[in-house]
Length: 305
Image (cartoon, rainbow, N blue to C red; front, side, top):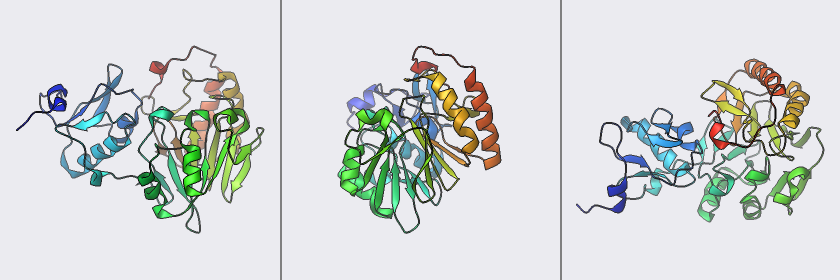
């Protein structure tokens, strides 16, 4: 059998054998570890395969990782992962799907599809763009709106909106990242952008950061807060706050009492589902913790994934 360059350079797993590996393009964005935490861990500031998949379910998770990774760093020896193994969009429940195909141009951010009554959908933030993906995403219904949570995730927004014939939304604080947006959110008051979908401006991570809450069940939090596997709790990425951690604390204090949701669906960091009362308690505690934080230099390596 011929040996490819990938075969020669691919690192082995701990027992000296293995098929799946992570190449040296990994940017440590955490996407792979979200999808297969039992198989992939952070080692030396990057993702590494620590155990090969066992059985069909774990093999499917590894394929999901390969198609979500923004640098396509999760690979199999000997060639490309077959397209028929692509599981995206991946349903999280009856109303929300994870888009996968995370983009290098959004630092590997997660994007979601939210199904609405009547068979339409909304896209929250953006995966990488391709015509084939756009067709796949609209297979479950017409996409009427592309909702951007903030400037870091604006890449591909206009292109997807034009492809779908959808409205593109962004807050005025980050308008320079999407100056041709169709709908511009203003101020700090919550606004209903569609029936059952409320946007809450949350300046802090960036000046124009917002979160979207749908049906008092789903919270698309952008980069404002996320679920940390390391702490087992809701956290803010205090070491990656571009605008103001003080403003983020004030935003949470203003907003947390208005929020009710079960699903936390961030742009970066892990997802989770908890009973609404439990989530509300954790959000109150997060708000209190954030009050004590002070500005610090940006440090991606300090994020507690």
